[in-house]
Image 1 (spheres, one colour):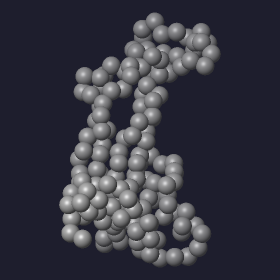
Image 2 (cartoon, rainbow, N blue to C red; image 1 turned 180 degrees about the horizontal axis):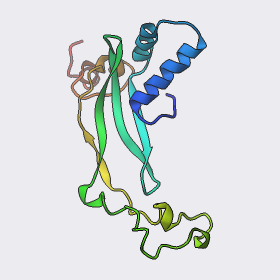
Image 3 (cartoon, rainbow, N blue to C red; image 1 turned 135 degrees about the horizontal axis):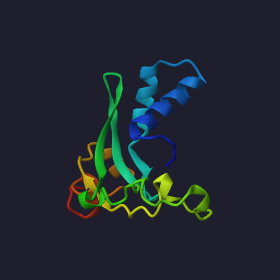
Image 4 (cartoon, rainbow, N blue to C red; image 1 turned 135 degrees about the vertical axis):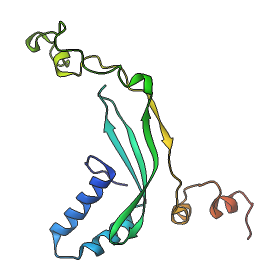
Length: 157
């Protein structure tokens, strides 16, 4: 398990490619194949307008086809529709406090971060895991797989 800093799952893969290529001369296709075979799942966290961090997306790295790393989104955060407009910044023409009057350490209304409504939503399944065999052998219990069936005494041998 590892962490990296990027704006999306695709951006993180691009950054990994760049770091490897900066270390020495290697064909890009070989770098991409190595990355695709080494990484199974990527979890993207993001910061919301209420300053909270949440899981934005969970993706599977499904391999390398036609020279591109293939990713499949398994889960994606969907914000509740009624809450989307609730955390927007107040109109600047309203009586927003002057920046100098804002309490130290607290964001002010003019910055658009003051008392933003809490973000509510949920992770929604949008895809299915395809590379289950490797993960099942690593000990991940995935319903419907051979390893799960053997562990529960339902499989052959």
